[in-house]
Length: 90
Image (cartoon, rainbow, N blue to C red; front, side, top):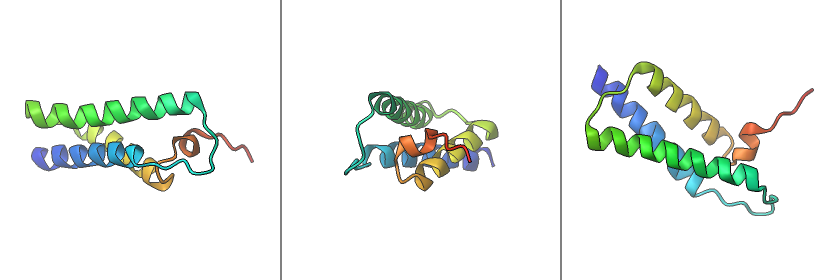
């Protein structure tokens, strides 16, 4: 069971990093702060996946859950970090 949770976390982190790397801005305006945040997310999610695979360490269910939530947010925003951090108050 622990190996399955670890695999799930690694896959979620890899998905997050790859989706953010492949984001195409198109007509969206450039925001330096969001760009830095996207870079940090790529480095942290990719680094977490590499660290887990290289060191062979197990991931806690809490870490896997966090990785999955981030992956779902990135997927829903189609890689647009600005859409994730946007605060639209109704």
